[in-house]
Length: 189
Image (cartoon, rainbow, N blue to C red):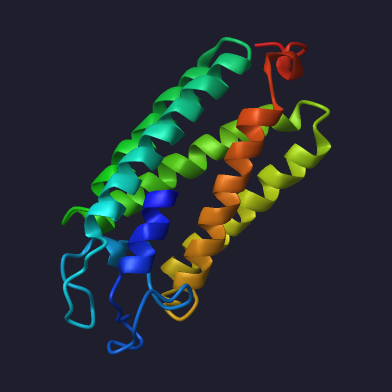
């Protein structure tokens, strides 16, 4: 996250709605703006290398999370799907900073959402009520973000992207540090 914060602070400015703006706007810029060598306002983007480093660390961290979470739940096809779909979503996430952005964003979104639904399926079968609530809210926020994209609501998308991202990060941290194999030991394959 530190690398993204630095990239945001170094982003010179400009957004689709306001090309001459200064700095990064949480409600008008997309994270993908951070990966362009030239900012929308025409200035060199001094934060691009921090953004690139950040996306690598984010993808590796999420892949490790998916692998670790899959170890907590009973063996079977679903934990394998969590490992492979989750890791595949992170490979696609890495590729969103290339010219394949649109395709990789769509693939990463579908794979990530599928993985989070599988994780929610496991959480729903435990007595972790707050975690169940957090999983459902995160999925709703993510689906709302994807719906806004599908409906072409470009005025809402940048802010929804940040809300979805923060909710996913919060949920991931909670799942990583506040669940363990004992929570899932009563579940059958």
